[in-house]
Structures are given as C-alpha cells and as structure tokens.
Image (cartoon, rainbow, N blue to C red; front, side, top):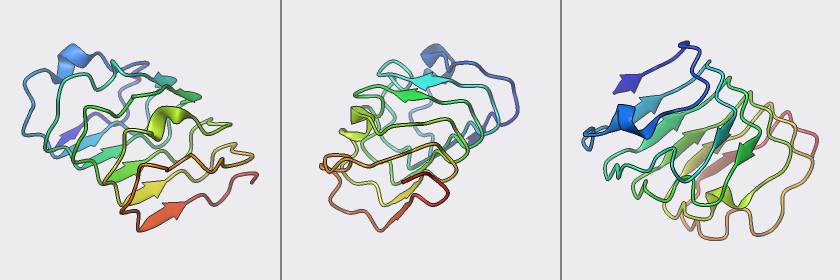
Length: 129
C-alpha cells in the first residue's frame, strides 16, 4: 500500500513511484491532480490492483493513461471535474469496479468501456447523464 492522500499533489511524477513493482494499492485521494496521461503511470506496475483518485480536480484523462497497469481491478475517480468520457479507459481490459460518481459527465459514449470484458460495477450516479 502507498497512501499519498491529502498532500496537495498537482501531478504525479513517475519517478516517485520508480521501483515499486510490488505495489498493490495506490491512494491519491484529496489532492489537486488535474489530469492523467500516459506518463502518469509510465512505470510498469504488474501487481497494482487499485487506484483511488477521489476528490481531486481531474478534468482530463488522456488515451493510454492506464496502459501500464495490467492488473488494475478497482478505479475510483469520484468527486472530480470530468465532463466527458475519454479514450483514457481503452487500455483497461480486466478491471471490475469503477466509481466515477459526483463528476460533471453529461453522456457516456458506447466505446467508453469497449475493451473491458469483466466489469461488475460501474457507478455513474450524481452526474448529469
């Protein structure tokens, strides 16, 4: 476990996580992170199963933001500022639980979770869908 909650982080420098290949859970909640891109999690985390990014200021998730997370099962993005769905979730193939509550989503396009075959729960409540 690595919990970096309430640290006023604006972005996550990939070098901070360098060498943590056995990490299972990453808590980044209640910071000031505004976007995710393919460099955010560029170090390969083969065992990371959960990322919690609740209560940030995330507006944008770029394509391939999660591509180096082959074991990711749980993703929490609640209480951010997402307004539209992006292609940022294309690389998630086995994740099971997704919480994107309390954002500003207005619609969900059909390709949103195209590659995810094992989803058990998607919580989109408290959006403007």
